[in-house]
Length: 237
Image 1 (cartoon, helix red, strand yellow):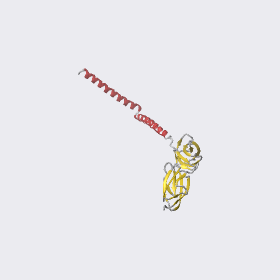
Image 2 (cartoon, helix red, strand yellow):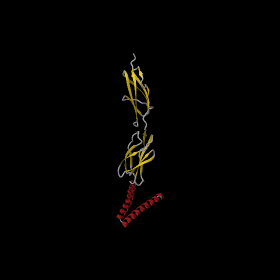
Image 3 (cartoon, helix red, strand yellow):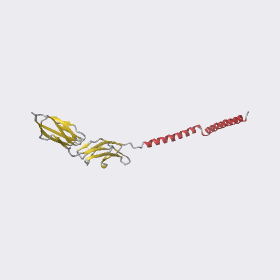
Image 4 (cartoon, one colour):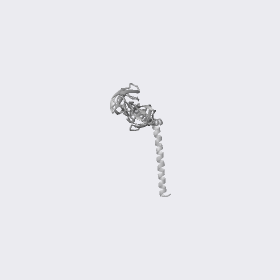
């Protein structure tokens, strides 16, 4: 037998001997502490791990999930007062902000729907939003921000041609005029197309003799202006 072979043989025997000793030691431990103790120890560490998981889960449930929704208000108004409404969940009060200034507060008393009258809109564009708050003040949430236009003046309505009292020889009459932007115009109850600058051009077929042309202009806030002119059509002989 060569020296190399003898060396490997001795090493193999040592490993087998160590393995046998390890098995004997494990059997001794089991006999000393008992198999039930080992199982109980394993269950103990398992429960600790589960307890930690449950604790982590319960702490995440403490997160706040309140919500606030503001109903879409009208785009424009001819009044300095507007009524705001909406609904919340998990909030105790609602604060209202007009142009980033707090104006009013509603106490909900367990209710989920709210409405409030907001005064003192400024002429032109106004920003409006609400903030839901809990009683302890620890949680709050802001609603969507809306823009409301307050327009108190009636729209301009100018009829450039024809003029009141004109006498014309053509039966088909062209009408040119101007009003404010975002305004609808009607001529004798028929709609007239108005461009983005508030200018309009239309035509009407006249009857022989006197013709009354009635115009109305209504802006997005509901303000209106009326105008009437008389044009006489005389057939060209």
